[in-house]
Image 1 (spheres, rainbow, N blue to C red):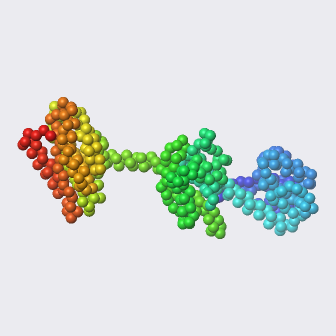
Image 2 (image 1 turned 90 degrees about the vertical axis):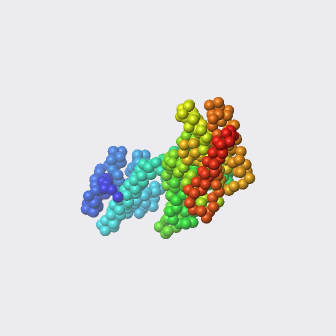
Image 3 (image 1 turned 180 degrees about the vertical axis):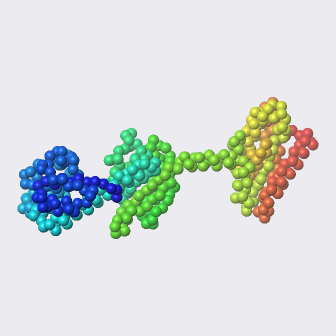
Length: 415
């Protein structure tokens, strides 16, 4: 995969055989004939080819195991009799006194194996860096749900064990979803098994699928994950497991919700605004619904006499009262001192709320000596699905409201 250099120490092999190997050695693989195999040679060379007596071989293999941990990079040249009498499990054995052709074949195969091992090591290094450089959670499972491979962000996301300790890679390897995420049977009944079920979906579909998943991670934070899962296959095409990549989109969704709220909610009263009102009505226009139009009587007086701070307090007080009084409605502040409540249908309870609301609001205003000049007027209109112009509906409700307002003034009524 990447360019590399490899060094091979050759011990005990005759010059003829050494020259054959040297002849077919590629430029990046260097052969060096050594007169002993000591600790320095074992540490310095990547591979060692040895032809020696059984007694010396025992000591050499012992030292190699101590220094390198295994004999996988040792190539021994043995007679058939020595091979039959040894108890050591060598990875690579060449037959003593082999022909030049056989030696060439064996050496070229060794070179190919070295290249395969190097490519494998390179791939492992690249995959490790790729998996742990990203903040995404990455994991690999077998078909039984055991976790075989996972990256550091995945491990960090896992909740602590029941006794409070942070789970290690060793104790999580080959374990299932329940153990890793501290889930119980109750969690299953409440739908927390979505991760396991989605992997079954991937296996059944035999293709990459995407999911929106929610998990409790780390110290108990609820995270929203956008997850892609793909089946893994062996050389025969059989599914052997799944790989998953989950992107934490919690902050993105929160930011999206914040932007949505800022776009649709009046920041002072926390009611929906005019923009949202039109969007909501668009979803209702093919059905009958009720629009209740309200505005505050003499609101300008409070602003002029006591300032905008008092005016803002009046708007908040009025908004809270409207919302509580028309709890089944979508309530909006559409500008200034104007409010609209939208109900899905007219019924006796709503009609009672409409009839009683001006008096209810007036009583609340009268509790504050600065607000006793205030009142509220309202009018309503019922949508006809056959009428597509929503503005006509607003105009009808507005007309009813102002008729009521003029009536109050003409009668000198204090509701």
